[in-house]
Every structure is written in C-alpha cells, then in structure tokens.
Image 1 (cartoon, rainbow, N blue to C red):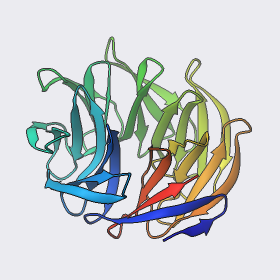
Image 2 (cartoon, rainbow, N blue to C red):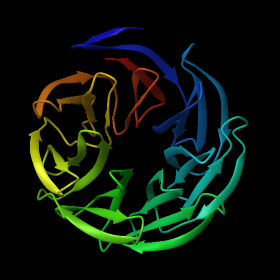
Image 3 (cartoon, rainbow, N blue to C red):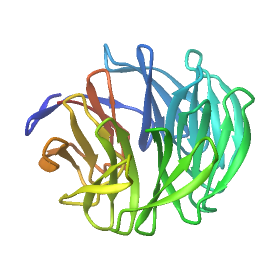
Image 4 (cartoon, rainbow, N blue to C red):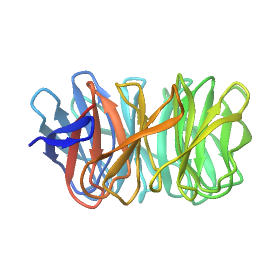
Length: 286
C-alpha cells in the first residue's frame, strides 16, 4: 500500500498490537512497544513484517536501547522493564516513580520521567538499581539526553528541565508557552513541542535560550529528526506530521498519515508512526 503525502509517502502498513507507541532500532530489527496490548513487536524492516511478539508489561510505551538491553517504560505498572533484544525475554522489572511517561539512556544510566510524582529516576545500567530519585518540582514528560545533559519535557508550566548527570542538579529552562510536553535533542539543538501553544520551539543548549518558535497547525507531540534533516513532529490527535526545516526554522509542510498520531521515530532510513487509537504502524519514506 503506497499513499502519496506531499513530499513523503507511506511505503508500508504493519499490523502490531493495540496502540503502537515508541520504538527503538537494535541491529537489523525495529522493536515496537504496543501500549494497548502490553507487548513488544520485533519487526524486520527488510520485509516489513512482525517476526516475534512478546508480552513485556501492562502498558509499554517509551523504548530505548543502551548497555546491551532494551529498556521499556510501563506506564501502568510503575516500572522500567529490561528486555533482552534477541530473545525478547524480560530480564527484570525495576520499580520507579508514579506513572513513568518515558525512558532514555545516557551517561551509563537509564532515566525515567515519572509525571504523577514529579520525579526522574536514575537507574544504574549495570546494577539495575535506582540510584537517585530526582525531584523536578513539576510534571515531567518526554525525556532525552544530549549536549552533556538530560532534557525533560513538562506537561504543565512554561519551562522544561535540564539535569546535570554529574550532580543530578535540575535547572528549569524557560520556554514560555505553557505545556512544553516533549523534547527532541539532536545536533541542531533542543526542539520543544509546545502542545498548548500549537508551536515548536528551538533552544540553544549552550545558552538555554530560545532560538526560534515555529507555529504548527495542531498540538505537537513526540517527534524526531528525520533522515531528510527535517524535524518530524506529530500533531497529537490528528493524522498529520509537521515537518520543520532547521536551516530556516520554518514549517515546510504537513505529511498526512492516518489515525491518531502521538509518537514518530526514525530508523532504517524511514520514519515510523503508529495509530495510537488502532493497531497499525506506518512506515514513511521521506
């Protein structure tokens, strides 16, 4: 099935468990978390087929690879689940704060943002123990690492959180739009999805200052830098993805997919977006 969508096209539709959410690439496979089914799907991008499915929790969403393992956030179970990529066997379930929103890896640690109790859990990847619970004073959401720091979105307020991994100290970085839900960190800077303001803000991580704010036609959510060099930001609750050019800080276009979008990931030269109200994962060629 191939559908034209501006300068991009859907090249495959893949049936996975209910409510596909986050994903991570490991070796030759994509591992897709299925929030509604409690499963992890192993997808072969050469055939666009699911080759294995394993139950990993109650409501898995965020997925990251690091230290030889997959780490999966389980929202309803208040745990980060360690999974072996090859066998997809659950190795350990690590209790963290209340309602983990997302997970990331960096600085030899796994980081979980726990939005209901306002904390970030730091897990030693070797011992698999929580070594620090960091209070943010807010409602942490999406979480990423880069530029020597851990960056955390906020479901409320006009700021995001920057954590120094050397000291675990939290700095509030003001964005100014209330509802700085998600962050994407790449070499062009820190991109903040301002869900309530219907815009995406670019921050300079060297100075913690705003470079540009780009209006988008919807509520931006959990996006990523694509293989075409553009920022791909899903517009939550719609069937569209906004594409932003970092060279001009302007909206290029919107790519129409299908269903209810929330998370977009980049792997194997493609973008991967799931219908969060259905069971279809879309592979998009930029």
